[in-house]
Image (cartoon, rainbow over all chains, first blue to last red; front, side):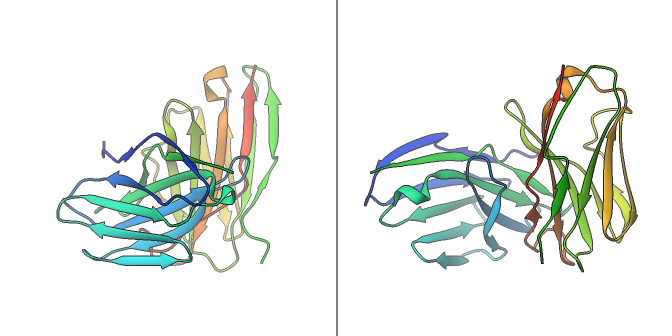
Length: 111
Length: 115
């Protein structure tokens, strides 16, 4: 069983704050790391796919970094807005290629 | 494209009944995945297909669960007989041609309640 952990489990921030959270995954047999955004009552929506150590991806105010050697990825949100409130999932793809999801970080941005 | 389509969106059934969930992947996608989401276990992969062929069904919880993909545009997940512990949201997802690195596009899910 692959261990994909996300922290914190939940987070409340004020509108305008910047925030970040962590995904930890096995450092061996790495193939890819995915980040998804999951709003309540909707389906997960892809943010990034990263495959190389040192990868950095950015989409608007959201960015992510990847360290495959130590087995972690950070997701950053700059200037959080209420519409950023969602659960952010990471998913690890190892040698078997299929995705193993973390349990998510639930972000609430307070106006 | 309409995205991944799942039906029904909600299903309420009684223990022991057969349940069939349906999925239409995005046209041109080679991979189709079935996931189950529960509070206890989060989002877990049940089975996935490549070009209509089941590749890995190690996540299927027991023999009561079966999945088929008779053609590139349709898949079913069947539970027979259903039990209350099968209550969950079942998601179907599809991706283009590289499992692991291609983005998976999720359907809206089917919320199953077994009484």
